[in-house]
Image 1: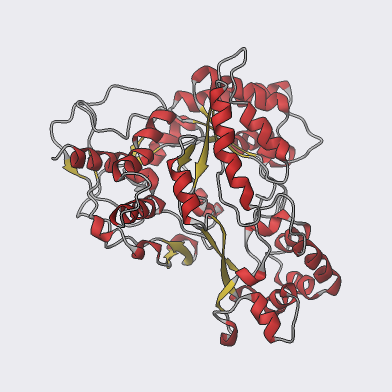
Image 2 (image 1 turned 180 degrees about the vertical axis):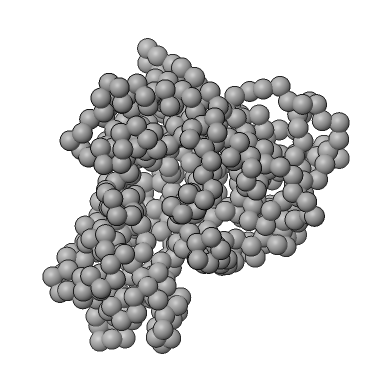
Length: 483
């Protein structure tokens, strides 16, 4: 990653970042947040920005305010500020520290939020599931008592296996806050949150101490193998694993974790729990750690963490306090691939309608992924109207099928042919002979150039929601008007 940035980075601020995006073949439409952690590091340096004892000076705060203002001037849609503690820094400097934005003071967050309120831009964030106070604070920040309200979009409304009852709180919380004058939305991935892991290389292990200790040694193979074999460590891991209550993301059930690749082919297709039973009744943790000691990251396995109940997904997809638009895939190339979740969502809506059990119309589903998002984020996109630019993506409903869920990988040449998880939509999305230039969507309204004709826009194979928004809206509008 560092080498790639050294080779291709041409920007030093938001004014240069937009042209840099326009020069990349990323898809029809892109909009961006500026990162709170990025601003902290740019002003304070990585060490200061990730040290609890260091508070930003008045000069630091003023500089971050200027950075945010400059980004909003260039059309960034808002600020992204993460509070989740099991997202950790990699590399050698400050390894395993939480993200810089988690060290922000109340005063710092309040000053940055004030700019967003004044400019009617968006705060995007992820509260820490283990610290409910971060959730309460971020949700309440949307209220405008004695001041303008704040657009807040949080990660994420998920039907978590580990705490299934919590899903009922998300729509209720949004409804109450918005009724009190806030402007709040949850983000939601409308497909099962299935993840893969090579050995122990999965972020959810960061949420408990023994898992975090192993991930800290991920780049030190010998030390990691010694740790996993140590009996004291295993006792610690078993204790963490057996804690089945309290706020958490991972269900901590190795009977719900299927091995898909391993040099020992006799275990492929089994869960770690079943392997433990086959080996004389071993604790599932010992079965897991034994295989990792024997084969390291050659053991590849999968599990579904959340969004496993289709009826719950359908209710969330129709709730006005919830936005369709969360995928963490780009940050975890070997762990997940949800780039085509918009297509998979349309498949579920269309299939339900065909089966005579609709939970929303196809037109409503298209609007939820296009015009609704564009209007809330203040983007000139997502609608088909006289005078607007017309981006059209034509989908054949016959190819909205199970192939969209298929597992696939593809190499990244610049990273030594690292094999990353991808989505192949070859039968669903046609890629034409050419590709029109990228359109960067800015977070402010502007007059659209009058378009005399509708034109078919070739789509990329790995097309995600950002690239689909305007195009599907135009397609739906043509369908509904009989054109």
